[in-house]
Length: 131
Image 1: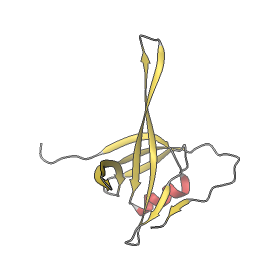
Image 2: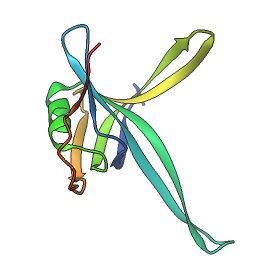
Image 3: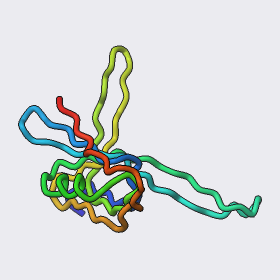
């Protein structure tokens, strides 16, 4: 087989409302944490167990970013198709690798499967961070 594949498909729920960040180049990106869960039965204890994983999603495709900001809130269930990107981060003497799922339009997508339940609270203003 020739070539390589970098493709990630996740189904999960937004852990926070999406955040739009303006970029220096005039564009913007939308990011949010996505929770996925694995559930199994522990035969020795006869109980159901659950392990939750958190994934950082970064959307660079403007059409999908706009749709995410309009329609998604904490708790919204989505199917995310993207690619894995690891970046070395340095803060002072500390270094670590940040892993993100990037949605940049090249065969990537966000599909809303189930909207979050509406709350009685006042509608929140979209989260926007300016650099």
